[in-house]
Image (cartoon, rainbow, N blue to C red; front, side, top):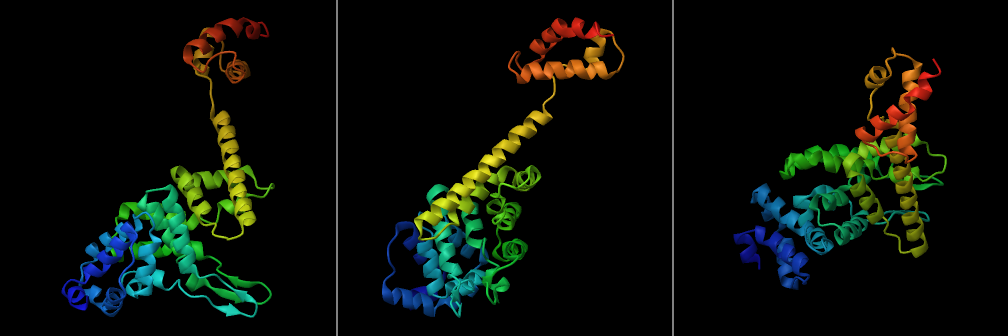
Length: 310
């Protein structure tokens, strides 16, 4: 194994990729050789390493390859920020779970519901800044304040170094930056504007964000898991309600004000707005369809009752 890995160090990545794709174990001497020869990967072009790494992420159970990369110390060479997430520190009765192994579970959870390698990559890096933000506070325990923002800011440098496509940078940054936001919006007192801000910031990636948030629930306590999942359902219900409200607020009559003035032969006035509102109300109440022809015919029907007020 050492000879073959020395000859072409990329075979180390390929071995772990095949193990991840086909779900087999690496023979012990081969694994030891991969560990001993890990440094040789520094001579391989970054594009080739990244290609193999993304194939591992695309496999049915990415954690198989990720754990092999980590245990062999290859991860320290190809993606040191991920390697640094490993390990658990304990102070008094407080300990934090191993961020690397937690992350592996999150990536596998995403892989069960999505083939999108960039959503899986976002899952891999969502807690990447926890080692830098780790702090122990007496009476409270471990905190990782601001890890989501710092993690998002780390992405540009990582994308450049790993030769990842810049077209995916903003997507990954967004999911990392927002991954704690939905759970904070469960409270009954949360305003429509807070929900609206999430909708605007997540934009078309809101469903992917919620997929990541659900995958991030790795507790072994089923009651806790169910409670968190129910909380995300509450958030999505609030999102739906706000979207519906905004849709109605943005709604306007197919017949515009200038046409109402022309048909009714009246100047710009409060009356024009009242007629327009009456048409909109008829559409919202289901009396007429939301189209120009029915709205115009309805205008002809009601105009005289409004003109009689003049």
